[in-house]
Image (cartoon, rainbow, N blue to C red; front, side):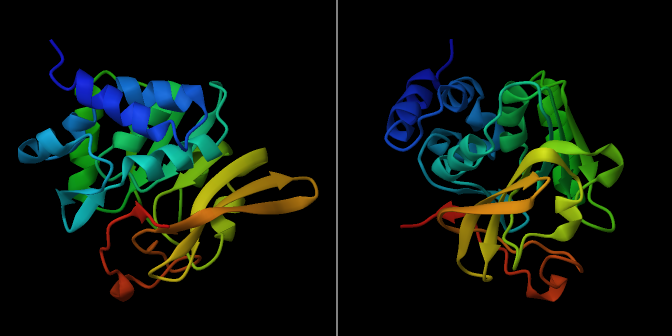
Length: 225
């Protein structure tokens, strides 16, 4: 018996006020968020707020995760890149909505724990890799969609180069404390950016297209406003 089923259904009902994509809601209704948080916090897993997962990091607010995934406009046949694995929760959701997912993470402990967790839960179309060198994972591109779970001062050209034609990137862009969630679409006319609302994420740490490592403030990700 699934003791979290009622809480999961309650969260989906709450998200319906802002999320209209039924596939995104269905994924949230089936992926067990309680398995992606520390065991003492499992009773809080379906509250609409970020929760700590160790290493001074958090699992993002469910509303923000849903907004980002909805903005990716996935149909089911996409090759997807996620920058910033964390606990692996968003990668699990993406695995239900795309053909396959490559997710990269700079914290080695998260790489190992996310690999084990995703494998144990049967999400076999997700590959977790350590982030090395530049942003993303160009050797496995191009990607039909990219999700970036950290805030950047601008849309990184490194990641634009890894997008397929007509691909979408969803990324927080702005300052270190407050950003705009942006959907950037690549076409033969260039890059078109749409602002989707204010948000707050940890800084994207990168020498090119991100923030210097010494500025990493380890703030949690959440929707604001």
